[in-house]
Image (cartoon, rainbow over all chains, first blue to last red; front, side, top):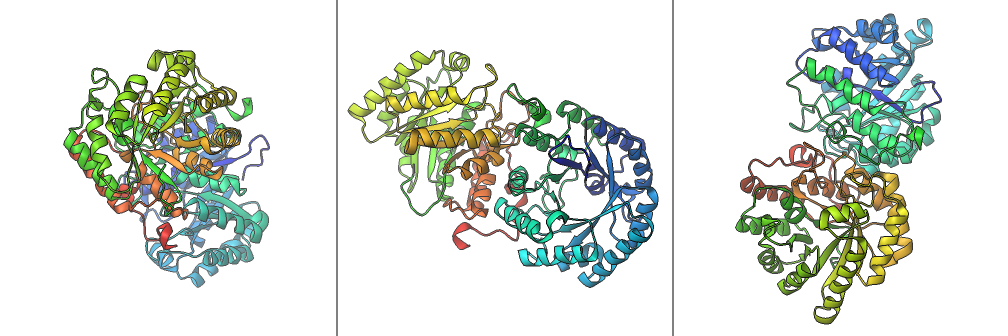
Length: 312
Length: 312
């Protein structure tokens, strides 16, 4: 949700949240700050710096408010955080964050196992968050990130109808954006095209970002499919960190480095310098030396024929 | 080049050639046969079993004629091999192979460094091979596999004009198919769409397969792009074996397992059973225990929402 007009696609870095919350080890706050600064220096325009959840549940995310403060000092970075409930939203709003994302499972069994809430309970949570935002923090954006829209490890198939029902429900409750997340890496290009196309038809400008995992290696093919039906914001995680509990050895989020190469090579300006982005990985390597990092561009380089979109 | 009508996309397994020729260790012939049989049992319809080159140059490929003989005994497998020159073609034709692929570099510096031939020398080599085929082996198909069409590590940018000139030249010399190969992993979806679209316009039914490497992680996105402009034959390598000399740690060919998942999930019948395909990896693990195998599907599985195209 960057306001800059000098980019075609917004790459939203979710590594500090989706990546680090899946890793047992806690990255020291100072290291996180250096990493976030390095991402910003590489030209990343939106960073999800953490998650406002009880430190008892996710100690890796305990410094979220501190990171929001830090990120707000950086130029050209839109600062976002994840919040699962009203209590998290209160802390997030107080921290000065510019946008919050509320994860909402379309699969009810997944919702129950993930946040212990039925759909009805989730609707009332979102309504309370929106009410608080409208009353006291009118400038903060609220996104609903619909999870399991392409399938669920518990429910199995999730229908397009179910996802669109939830998307419309969220729009009716007053969220500013509805993004779609392939939580467990089930998405395929045909599904992606069909669902994002329909989302745009039903929600118009409220239709939001794509959040893909690379669990089955289909991540960038799904990005291409989503781009072809008009999606312009993509979540990604540097080094693909975070893994996936359902697929040992398989990477989690799509890799920011490879995503930026794809987009720039297609003539789409991201504002990101790939060399500097690859350099930012060093902070991850320093802080989490045992954590595998994914991605091809950091090893292969951009190659002799590569040109940035702005130079085409 | 399978004649079966029960598949929508032909997946051509090139691991026994492109994969194994890049690995220093030689896979024992018996193991290769077991692997090729397992691939066939999984439903793979075309296998490039090796390369007809001097054993001194590539001892890993010395058993190519033997492998052709073996593969010809398998049901539903179209048996192909790579040949760099007339001498290789003679051996290939004698072996009983059903199709040969001649690699032809569009980048002349690459051609000189790879096969020590100028373009003119290559034209005359192809002409001699076609003449021999026409005279003595009229049933064997000849494909020109144009390499470096999406860029070259020596020349840098390779223009569409250069590639199409070479494609037309090969068609004029009488080859049956012209495939396009992203030898060094430079291809991007826009390039892929543009070049394959143009190839089809200029060559019609002689326009052939796509051979992508995953050096920069863009392999499946390129497959999707090529499919969208009508390409129906894709090369791939089980486990992505072969690596890439230009990118340590980066995989070589696109991974057959992940490719088949992509295609089947899009409703495209490949004839391949993914479980059996993954099982075929065991022969590679046994024969080459130190060689890294790539791909996500073998770790992640197909997931609870997956359906084969034929069951959709």
